[in-house]
Length: 337
Image (cartoon, rainbow, N blue to C red; front, side, top):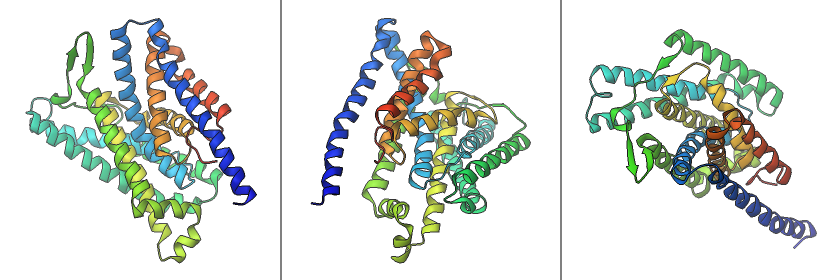
């Protein structure tokens, strides 16, 4: 073993306890709200926080793929999120005229949700592919150009939403997703529970694709050394276009889910949620799906617990958590050194 390899191994062993300590501290802080809330309120806020965290993960997962794996600062990601919400609005609006959404049976509701999900994901992927082909491909390797060009794309996409849908809308929510389950004094809102399950499923699928499939290996290898991958006969530009489209599709799906959770949607909603997505990605570490998953849960829980007692500090506390984690681990919880 060379001296450099040995040093890296020692540093790796040294970083692991620090990562464990940081994660343990975050879990410990989660219990602090019990000092000012009763148990039922604490559990309700926790469920709401987990639900919000899962929605943030849907957005951050696409962002960490594009930002972390492809080294592209994509400020148009929030616009993909918004398009997903508005496409979902259109699908639900049409199906509601047929009686499938607000008054339909549970099977019609689920079928309507499935159709909206497919349309939003496909449309988000196609929009992402177009943006990558026409805009982002010209800016690979130049972060300043990426910021400027994707911010311009965001403005165009948001204006298109205003032109097509005429501004703010109120999304019809399927009847099956409304209401609550009561367990003792804990009020579990149906859609929040569904969101938690969907977020877990997406995390497992994305993690397995990136870590356990040939495609995931090729993508990660292309990021590390695109010339070698190209020499092996793989079309790196086509792979990167597919990865960008997949990230946009995840953002669009997140927008649809967010629209069901908060039915009042607007053309600027993507930019508001993009702030949280960047916080999640930075906390978790660039290119780490598991880091984004954990970061999303931390942000969602912190936001809901703090907002209950001190609403004006809800965003600030997440920025503080991000700053503290970066002081201890500059590359995030699971970022590569």
